[in-house]
Amino acid sequence: EITKEQQALMKIITDAYNRHQIPQDVAKKLLQDQYSAEENFLLLTEMATSQVQVLVEFTKNIPGFLSLDREDQIALLKGSAVEAMFLRSAQVFNRKTPSGHTEVLEERIRKSGISEEFITPMFNFYKSIGELHMVQEEQALLTTVTILTPDRPYVKDQQAVERLQETILDVLRKLCVLQHPQEPQYFARLLGRLTELRTLSHYHTEMLASWRMNDHKFTPLLCEIWDV
Ligand SMILES: Cc1cc(C(=O)O[C@@H]2C[C@H]3CC[C@]2(C)C3(C)C)ccc1N
Image (cartoon, rainbow, N blue to C red; front, side, top):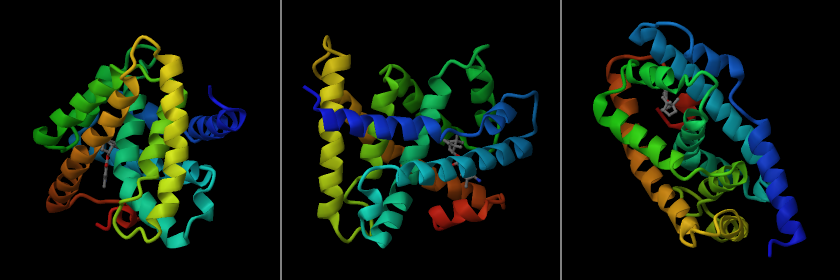
């Protein structure tokens, strides 16, 4: 019983999600032949930077987002960037690239100076996302729900964000029932992944700190979005 306007909303968000993808050249670079840990790190920096740019462009297409208070828009972007990035990279990772380059991508990430204690939860998350076999509409809506989380730090008008998020949650719930009729608790499983994402973002903060310690270079955009 998805209404006409909910159909339209889902189409806008899914088209935006698919339109704003990581440039193929960045993803392809990661899949080229051997690199040193240093070069791997630089590639991940490029990947993360382009993922943040993709996130900002995508967010501007979420109906209602640009009508929010300007400072709240920034607070939502900063608060959700890591989670949206992990969701996006989980989808990139799980999309079996033609010649199954997934292992190569995993290899690159493992050999880029990220310590084992963050690698394990990261790949566990990727696997748990992969097992959901989300359709692209679900991926786009779940990312939107993450971005529109009202209780991010420094959000002033949480009500306004909540109203937007509830609209998206309603469409996502109906879509899950339609797409996974044999699994009534699928929607709940999806939302459970958002909790897993919050844990990952704590690991991410430590990952950044350990890179900082070893004097790794970040781009200005990554410094700005994560206050590093
Ligand atoms: C500040 C900074 C952050 C990252 C990052 O968050 O990378 C993300 C973590 C994993 C999930 C998306 C990433 C690009 C990943 C695949 C390495 C990478 C380089 C860098 N200089």
